[in-house]
Image 1 (cartoon, rainbow, N blue to C red):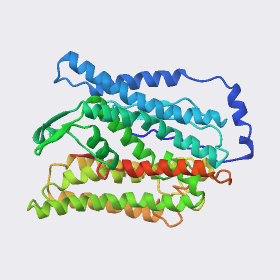
Image 2 (cartoon, rainbow, N blue to C red; image 1 turned 180 degrees about the horizontal axis):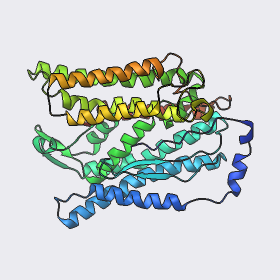
Image 3 (cartoon, rainbow, N blue to C red; image 1 turned 90 degrees about the horizontal axis):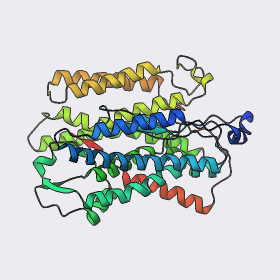
Image 4 (spheres, one colour; image 1 turned 180 degrees about the vertical axis):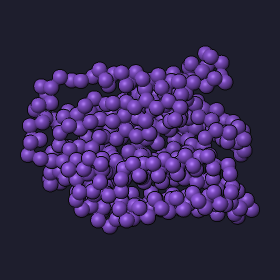
Length: 397
């Protein structure tokens, strides 16, 4: 579930008047409104619990839908309003409905930037406005929802998804959540779950990589040095996948369970592998069309030669296969799965994002003027929220 700012175009002399042209261009809104209505329906249906009484299911689904879409709207209009203030041509948000496949019923939303972000100050304002506006709603909604959540026996809580924890979530649970006795856990209310989802999405967007919100903020703060930081952050996601799996397995081995739950641990850690590949795909799409070519192949140094379809099908295949093998402990099947993963990584090393010369995660250049002290502090605080929101295992099984 993502809703980052859509990659902005590469600067060119022809873009200088785009902000003035945007002021006279009719505001397109019909497609946005239809997608938003479809997303409302998708989120509502996804959160409908058929095991609850109809009236209670209606209330719970409506609470989650209203809270989550309120957070997403605040996030996206934070970007949109900041873009308009800086006369950057930006579309209204396009919401993405995704019933059933997403636990939230949506993939979030995107905003299309149709003109260049001219300065690092504008880049910071546009990049930071979304996450900060979203958190301004997500944090109090989670606090209120946690205070109205139920304490249930641990066995009951473990029957569903295990939601990830972060420093900020722990602090909110400590001050606002109910007291949890030994052998029990908190079953989040719909509004608390929506607040959690909002903070989870914000964590993803604040990754200081490429043209995610965190990438915008980090580039505004560090300038071109951010491109080197982004490559290391991106690669650390792959490392984190292996570290996460290894830590789960080591815990099981110490408990005498061996590799019996390997499939469950791979699936709980898969988020980082999928996002490692997804960011590489987004990086390829953000390259100039002339550099990518019509088929997504490399036509200049630094751009990935790894075909988008190959990368996409390989990642999707590994994710689907991991899901199918989740409850199977066959050494041969899981050995084959890791061989397939090794082939994908080898392709990334040879032709893709792991090449030393890769520029997939590079941010488009912008004005050289540095941030003032006030904006630099805003950038630091925004990136600090990523640390506070970081969840080692966002969704466990």
